[in-house]
Length: 137
Image (cartoon, rainbow, N blue to C red; front, side, top):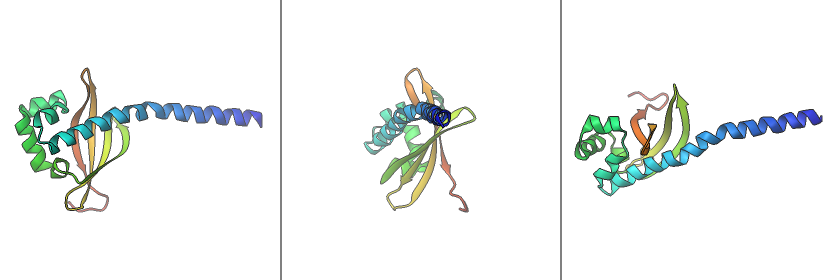
């Protein structure tokens, strides 16, 4: 019995420890996503552009071109009514933060943010709109 209790305790500690790195990374990651969304809402395109990865900044070149892409391609991110952070997961060595965004019309959108860690901190490297199961798009 004592051995089972000890094993159970060790297993519980291992699970808690293994979960710690993702949890520790989640707060800085959601902070970056939230700060970028706040910058969009404040029409501070320079700050919003600064949260994009070097690859994204090179692709768009200017905060204004980046802002136009977000406003037209991701209007739910441009002016969200509500933002909720769901799971942070690793897929093929990349970290993806799932975000549930409610737009101004009350429609819910799921997005995956690919995050990379740079010398300057966490940056957004990609955003994908996630197709809802069973939805026809």
